[in-house]
Amino acid sequence: MPIEWKAYLETGIPIIDKQHKELFNQMQELHAACKEQGGKAAIQEMFGFLEGYFNDHFATEEKLFEEHEFPGMDRHVSAHDAFKEEIHEFRKDVNERGIKAMDALKMNRILVGWLTKHIGNMDQEFAPFIKKKLGMHD
Ligand SMILES: [Fe+2]
Ligand SMILES: [Fe+2]
Image (cartoon, rainbow, N blue to C red; front, top):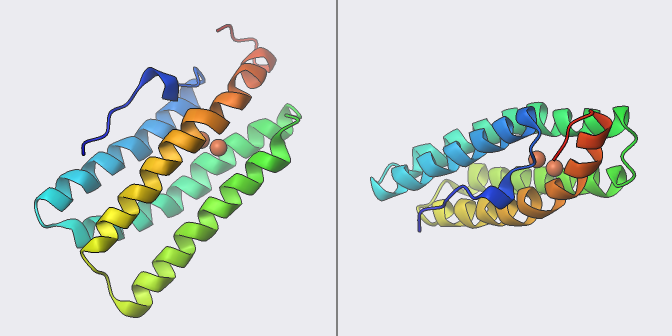
């Protein structure tokens, strides 16, 4: 099922929304590649993309939390760490046993869950607080 970018996923913080959309675009590429039997290469590409995403995007959010003393920081950082761990375990598993076609489905399921639960919920929780600190209006 193709995924759609929805307004509820927006935080209104330009750098954060840009990084979230980069993940979303990569998910669409994975989806397109799976339809064209290029799923295995696209999964490896997604693992590579996610490493960069952890380093750039999670670091961007966590730096904002620290700078502005966001009260929900510990809980949010734990969610980032748990997601990193889940992806690292998945990658390790794939590297040990070899990649399978069904891994595309698994990757998609994990990422759609992340998009709706984390980006669509947890990231929305810090948005009003950070925007206020940055002097931005809703
Ligand atoms: Fe995020
Ligand atoms: Fe986050």
